[in-house]
Length: 383
Ligand SMILES: Nc1ncnc2c1ncn2[C@@H]1O[C@H](COP(=O)(O)OP(=O)(O)OP(=O)(O)O)[C@@H](O)[C@H]1O
Ligand SMILES: [Mg+2]
Image (cartoon, rainbow, N blue to C red; front, side):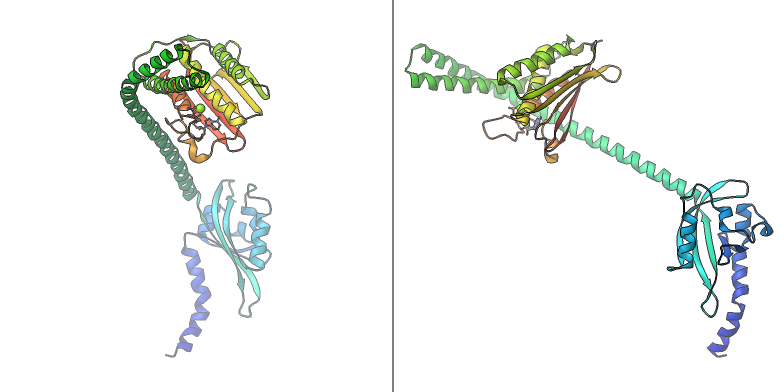
């Protein structure tokens, strides 16, 4: 039998075959005329939608479209099917005869006769409610996983920071021991020379030496302070007083005029569990940084309020130059500084971090380059 002869009967039987296929598939199959009136719906469609064939035939697709679909969705489907590209696919919300709504994935196409003239449309749709639910669940798991991952990374970083601090502690104890004694000798020798009434130039140099000696002692003391492991006994500290005193001292030192300072303390702020001079030092370091970041002009906002149950939150916000993203992780590390050599030791924030952590508190930072930085400190209420 030639190929041509084989194809001819096939074509004639095609419609019958198609109908038989439509009757048995699980997907919902519809055929509609060019005015979107159903002329055929397969048993799966009738079953899912709850209509008899007689009820559905002659009705338009509007009957099974939920009101919750985006406005103009039906018009869009019809337009895309009747005009180029002559197909449409996407999600729609269908509604059954009983009013039950479900999400379906619909594919439509234009049907033409042998002469290529449009005669109707087909639509094949599938209930994807379960699939969507699974996808949403999956997405929510993915989000949870991402959050857990972030927490883990944060904890890891904190751990690393604590380890680093511990290492610095060991090192600094050794350093303090090795450097402390010769330093004390230098200091007393300088004092001795100063008492001998040297001429002006030498006196100036001696003062310089004394200044440097003090700076070295200060560095050692600081590093030791914040890595100190000995159990401290904390007191009930008046946070507002500490903050105000600390601010006042710095403003006096800097002869501050052009920085606007705004404070807002919640009335009856509870006392916090801390050691006053160390807490003051922790705030000092943060304030100094803020002033340095703002330069001549700017605004410093200090807020304190009760936070979750047992904590008080202090927020120190400056309008300074901000901290670049790549530095955000490093600023609490000892010896990290962006200042010129000799200008900063990179100890201020690591000292503050160590102090606040030792009180059972926490410190966080947010910053936008060019806009400013906000340090948020949490301290335990004194109970
Ligand atoms: N408020 C801030 N605005 C912008 N950058 C800041 C701010 N606070 C800290 N930094 C950045 O973090 C770095 C580390 O601060 P940290 O106080 O630890 O050290 P330092 O100020 O450089 O030196 P030191 O405090 O020992 O004199 C700073 O060099 C600076 O780059
Ligand atoms: Mg500093």
